[in-house]
Amino acid sequence: MSTSDTPQPLQARVIANLGIELLVYHPQAGYFHAQPMKKHGLVVCGDEVICDPPATTEHSSGNHTDVNAETLRVRQVNTRNSVLQRTDRRGHGKPIAANLTQLVAVTAIKPPFDPLLIDRYTIAARHMGVKLVLAINKTDLLDTPEKQTQADDIEHLYQSIGYPVIRCNGKSGDTEALADLLKDETSILVGQSGVGKSSILNCMLPERSAKTGALSELSGLGRHTTTVTTWYDLPDGGALIDSAGVRQFALEHLSDVDIEAGFVEIANASADCRFRDCRHLVEPDCAVLSALHRGEISQQRYEHFQSISTQAAG
Ligand SMILES: Nc1nc2c(ncn2[C@@H]2O[C@H](COP(=O)(O)OP(=O)(O)OP(=O)(O)O)[C@@H](O)[C@H]2O)c(=O)[nH]1
Ligand SMILES: [Mg+2]
Ligand SMILES: [Zn+2]
Image (spheres, helix red, strand yellow):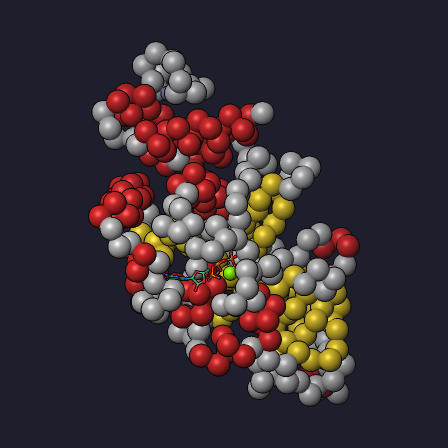
């Protein structure tokens, strides 16, 4: 018997965790439902899994909306390169998506800009060791000088720290600047509900797969609020994951050191504080407070750093 006759285990990508089972994808074999084992823990969107070989060799890889009838058994979950986590009810990190290279924090004037949430994403990205991009969506709603100034302030602040900031419009389809940054990356769209994450995703996908695919039913793409974190391959290379909107992004499973590291400008300045364990509150010769008073660190970022650190300690 030649090796090509031996059923080979299937290495597949987790497209979504549907609760009871996973939806996985293999470029040749197509979509399958798959069942992880308890020992695997929580398997999430973006995980790479090794499944038992499918019994049949006839697969529906041609039509992206079909899922093969057979449910596969997951044998192994490959080691993750990175994982996005939030804090669960017990105070532990709970995975949301795996194997990302980039977070795209989407923000908009409506619902109102939430810089505290953006700062939480700067912490998460730093902790995961991935890039962070800030996308200011709904440019059409910046129709007064006051609203323009709000957007400009956000843009300048995060650019000054070193993050790429792009503007986009998920309604008109003006998303080229973001598309350039997504190429060959595995990115996840994160942010409040209603900022336009699914609309932006829709602009990145070829018309048919976005509007008629089984995947868009999962995530409610473009129609409802997203409930299932879902992976989409991008036509020009890379992948984009759509996630459910959040009100607050809890990071209580992280340490104070992790939180300070996420405020990179504060972490850099703190190297010159007199005390190694300086909290940058009242300590003498605090380089962070000096930088704050010179205007090199923004008051808002400093306050967010202090408020998130306090939550972590408590
Ligand atoms: N004016 C305007 N509206 C937009 C734009 N992008 C998206 N919207 C609208 O904003 C609303 C919410 O968009 P979604 O794409 O569903 O937002 P979401 O971030 O995916 O929301 P969740 O799935 O709940 O997290 C929809 O009515 C969109 O049509 C934009 O650039 N301008
Ligand atoms: Mg959505
Ligand atoms: Zn200090």
